[in-house]
Length: 487
Image (cartoon, rainbow, N blue to C red; front, side):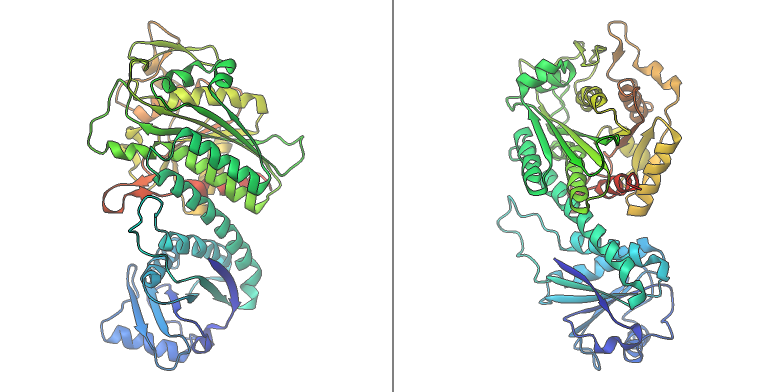
């Protein structure tokens, strides 16, 4: 996608030559200083009842009289918030996806100049989302859209901010698409070895340091908890480490840890058959860490970043982990396994211990960890836990800026009681009550030596139903967080 800024006054939009002129209209009235020809067309559409200045409203006018553009696309927001602008822009571009338009020019009308950078970023993300189609295992998928060039219209005063926003938005969009592509692939394609090759490819294209540990190397490290989950599958596990070095060696890195369960059957604690196909998305945390790594590598901020992905399958077999087994983690802590379907925390705990060697400024793990988080927050906000208020505030701010929001959840010491075991240092599950919290409390036991955050993305990493597919979240949140650490 060729996405660029084009200087143009909103009082002369009739002279913009493009296949489609897209107007994202804030508020409930037509601005007085808008191009009179365009203004007349909008008011006429409103008078005829074909369009309203409300959220969710859009209209395509072909061969609009008095305009050089071949189409005029109107999209209402009902507000002047950036969130509404993104939704309207995405809906408008989706209208053009199956049409013959090869170019579009987008104007955000009625927005304050201070929003120029954010609007530009969200336009890049909206366009990428609207035009994305999964094709890898679907030869019958619709042909790619002809829409190959989008220009963001604005005055010269907004140019600098808009260009910054477009660059950031395109980098995040590339990361989101990589995350979606990985997560959407079926489990027989997206294996632990596949994830390792994706990281290697990214390392080659962006000059990153990449290390992939096989089973023998993982055993040598003493990752007994990770290996206990992996041993039920014929697919070999992979422990993947990638480094982006954008700052001095003396600067402590940010470490992102992704849960990479490429298929989760539940193991011996077998899941119900209904919707089990969606457990190919259980590597959404790993996919988002990979996508964030790409976005950061393209933006080249002055920060050091380490990405860790623990990748394996969770399968039932004669070798598989059993309920009641006691395993020893890399940290030396023993774990009584009460439910083999609580496997994500078992691979993450060893990854969190491994992260200590980097003497990190902060560690954030990302995982499709609990159904309990879906019940608590649905698919709007990711669950966020943090060991300190500053990190929590940074993650929350990053999510708000990226329109990829999270919600802080509690870590009260009293929740530790649910993980008590008579046979090990701790159990891998507690009661159903507060299930997302006790899962986070489990991970916290292995993250005491640094600032630690945890994102439970079980509700936000993918969608079910007719629109089933990976979302690429929280690449936006994570990228904004990493960028904020470079300041």
